[in-house]
Length: 280
Image (cartoon, rainbow, N blue to C red; front, side, top):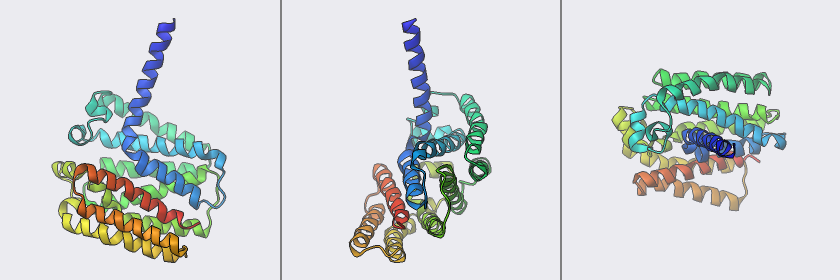
């Protein structure tokens, strides 16, 4: 009996790790930043619901990531071999079954927090289908816009889950954050450049690599300057904010290896988070 229980426990842990690996690359770039930015921008957050928004965001990321990764598993064999499909931890058919099982799970879980969270969940599903099933990720413009809309929708849904109202500061924070994100989101394409070229995706990085790098070096510090003035951040914090943005932007020009791009992307996610946290 004990051995059977231990084996069952090991199987459960393996399944949990398999699901986590689908979302591993989004933990530092999406899950943590959006959770923190939601807490920073929401006017009256119910902090006891922090676990709720983490679960809500992760479930929707998991559903989207599975949908995305079953489209072209061969691409991940070169760039991200740790992912469940190239690692042989799950078959494509089983992954697809999990993806569709998660749809009602996400909708029902969202409905527990009201119509606004439910609407955000439905919108995220529509954006995910557009992105993955109808070629939304094949061109830089549509990929940037869809991803920006998805980030804003996740934050709106997380705000609903945490039980907070929405005020003018929240609206302006998310609006400016979305604009910053839309104009700099190609930061995430550098780490996937080789795979995108092999897959024939027309991103800003694959089509205009020199311009894409320069735009990061100029764009991030300029947005840092603008937002620090917009939100009337104190001088010391403004200098630190702008200096950090300058360093992050410069990394995309100076360091050009795949590993460096991954690190730069993580640092970029922090700079995007800081742009919204500066509202409070």
